[in-house]
Amino acid sequence: MKVALVLGATGGMGYSIVRELSARNIKVKAFARTKGKLENMFHTDPNVTIHPGDILNQTELIAAAEKVDVIFNAVNIPYDEWEDKLHLLTNNVLETARQVKSKLAVVDNIYAYGKNTGVKVNESTPKYPHTKKGKLRMEMGELIKESEIPYLIVHFPDFYGPYVENGQINYTLRQMVADKKAGFIGRHNIAREHIYTPDGAKAMVELSMHEAAYGQHWNIPAADVITGEEIIDIAKSITGYSKRVFTITKTLIRFLGVFNKQMREFAEMQYLNEDPVVLDGRKYEENIGSIPKTPFHEGLKESIASYQR
Image (cartoon, rainbow, N blue to C red; front, top):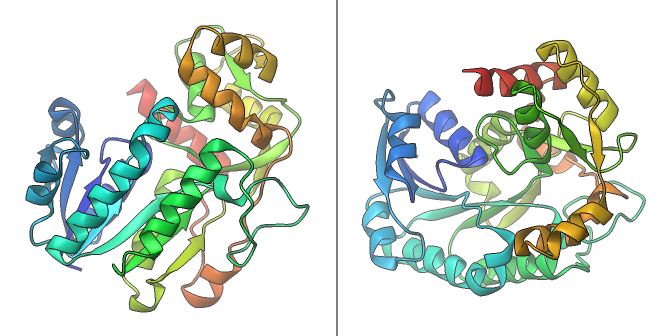
């Protein structure tokens, strides 16, 4: 791979993928809607050229994708736009990859797997999505598999890290850094997965370098499971935050959803905070190598530092 295009380059995972590609001395085209954000994030990196544009605009997308070897799709649109735009977005990316004859690497979540079955989820686990968004993600995956484009789909747990503005952990960290009243989404005593985005980016970019990885989907788990209590304790030790962190319950999210469509959509996904799904990464380890796993204290410290900066 000599040149890559990263869609959604200003989002949490997109940003980390750009940085990982650049660190490997691969030329990167960073694509996102806001020129100012792109310039702010990447203006000092000689391996990165910025391409402001709208992924729903096929002309802009094809122009950015000229002469690239791999397109990384890390675009994250708001939940309340998934039903109207996710299929259009996916078809635009597929048509672009088809026209420029590139490979495609897709950032995906765990929603299509459905509810916790009591064991870690591997790539052979049947997908039984029970939510509207899980069904949409499964449909997106089917579109990609049927496209005849060389693809790989990577399933990640929830993100945290620099620029992960929609991440549940990052929401809490922002409030703590600002010394405001901070809330944590979900019960504090439940252990679940949150992956540090630079770890996920390293694993995904490594996959993209292996020809045999294409035509498959891959699970990349976090360093471990961790409870809200542990996250809060670590964050307090780093920031010196002394206030009580309150619980943002599913009931509160549903109440807010009466007035806010985005929160109404968010409520559907709270099953992951009640009975978490945990990924099995043995396929990656057996075929590619060790999964990057930054200890939570280190990852939280760097995430907090990104806000302090």
